[in-house]
Image 1 (cartoon, rainbow, N blue to C red):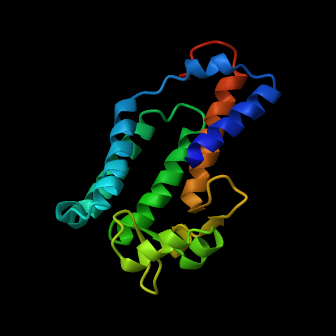
Image 2 (cartoon, one colour; image 1 turned 90 degrees about the horizontal axis):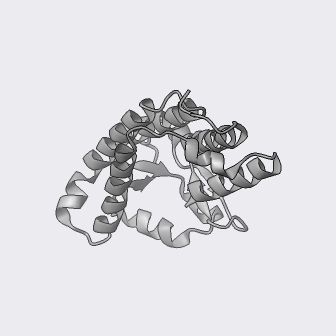
Length: 188
């Protein structure tokens, strides 16, 4: 959901800068099916994980890692587009912290409370969530984990990572670049 807010904000700023909304249709994304696959894997894991399916709980960490590899491949294929290198770096940051922590993104408990995500904090305390885990003294690279609270009045309170912020910046840059270019092939 946060990416939708970033895209909307970037479009508004692009319009204020006299950019063209129609120019967004000129963005030529390659391997979009890989992006869809990675998102579907993660969404499927969250949905099926909530059903406490044993096979999902047992293999979720491998599937998360696989989804990040797929996402990295997709972004790599689009590296010529402005902002994609920043998005790639953000994904790498998240990938690193997820891999070294057993296939789960660590989350700082106090940041969850600051963001008003008390229910999610309880779920993570139970240890049964398939994509995230709480930061402990054994967490590696905790500075790359979800530690930055985005509390209310933010429309979608969350806790994000440095990698997430890089991806937000990359998406913002991609939209700005597309809107400010004249109607042409934006692949270069």
